[in-house]
Length: 401
Image 1 (tube, rainbow, N blue to C red):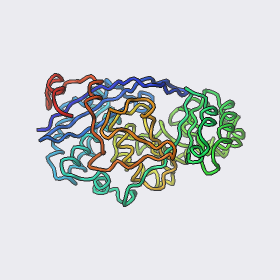
Image 2 (image 1 turned 120 degrees about the horizontal axis):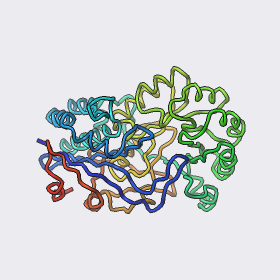
Image 3 (image 1 turned 180 degrees about the vertical axis):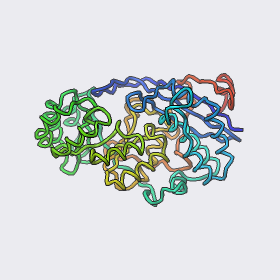
Image 4 (image 1 turned 30 degrees about the horizontal axis):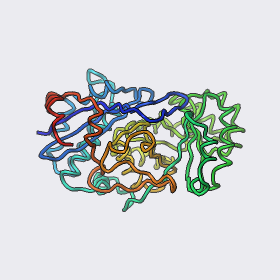
């Protein structure tokens, strides 16, 4: 019988990350270990209440339920391909009574841990596993290093930061995301200054994190277009489909983020003609398999796809995102986080790595997600006991990572 372990990870960040809706100074993740017969798989959730309505506490509660862990344990009894299909169908509930639909971040933690465990158990490369899960129609035959975005938040002057980079480093930037302030008018002015420092080949987006009003954006539509912004990411409160459609009618390209966590969101978006692109993140989509299903649906609907991150991913999440981003062709942009700036390098094996000079994220390779959680990370975590299928925290802390 597999043992399931849960950990709360709140690792301080060396620099705060700020945008219009939030300032983050530490990770806020849940780690899950699935252990059996000397094999360990790792998963992670980065719950955000303003994205999926979840918290660290709600994820811990959802993942400790016997009616979640029982089916998970049964999935591990199946042959590899059948097990992957069973894993993709697991739905941790968001309500304490088992109601209210799938808890997306909790599902991501569980799905990633089981995926990683199955791959390590059977010696299956992560990309091969995604193909065997039925996503060969949207995946490349081989992984390739991902060209990654530069993301500039409100914690530092974006113009000064860009101007301070060597010219050859700026020339390698494929995409820049500018985190917006609460007012679109000064954001348009700032975006124009940022655009002037970027190579002509780079795309530029502005992420308002749901903080703008439709009327204010419409008044600044001409200025935003003139600033050279290629798209606005989530400018309005989530799922304001008619408002987003009105912005598109004024010539603004729109990317969904907080408004897209499920296929029903994509259906509503298509019905209203509300977006051009979608930002998909492992934690908010429910795991790599659910994300790929959404990517397939988005492309069928004619939407461009970006692979994004949750700020403060400490291990399995960034690695799983890296697996997907290096396996999906024709992405409009790829985010890789700034773990090398925020966290010490000893949290995973291998450590987080991005070539900032070339804006390239290398392929990790290997079975599963390609990384292992280290003792250094677990020493920064709080263990939470899982009684039905795993031992108490004081027992799990003595096991190898």
